[in-house]
Amino acid sequence: MKNLLILSTAALLATVCMANAGNLRSNTWRASCNTYYSNSGNDFIFNVKLGEIGGCRSDKVKQHSWDWSERSEVITKNERMFGKWEWSATINIDRDCRPAYRNTLFQVHAGGYLVSPPSWFGINSYNKFKTNVDGSGTNQAVPNSPFKLTAKINATRKDVKVDYFVNDQFVISTHKNSLGNGYKKMFFKFGIYRVNANCDIAQTYTNVKLKKVK
Image (tube, rainbow, N blue to C red; front, side, top):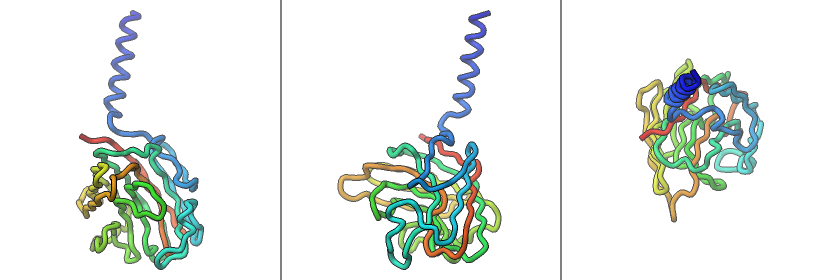
């Protein structure tokens, strides 16, 4: 009986491990620059009020056409996220005004102060999807209802390639080569990161998934 119980327990643990293989849990994430957010399991809620400066040191710096940046987001606890990954979530945006000049939904970041990340995917003031690559605005409008965003990432110390999908339909790819001796850090972020906004905003990310792929 004792041996049978041990075998049954081992089989159950193996089944659970197989079910969760490659899919990281919600405790993979922490607040970025001590910004506020709430979450339950793999669901996250972000809120930013108009004019509320973000918690990162760079958010207080005037850049280009904006005087500050607004932020509420999370970041992976692990800053060595090299390899092939797939991140996805269903996003709902609650905003009663014209979109911000730029609102970043997801980032693949390599760290640094006032340094652009190797890849980001967001929304421009015309309510169309856009990435960090020059001239990489898309003609695809943001849906009026919750939409699924997927990022398929291949991050090495030499370069970062990301394919972005909305509702499982391909939208755009980004590719960024590193400078100097290559990327030392690599981490992912999601939530609200915007500039030149026009009103308060809330973004809900449900069923957030992050898994290592071969």
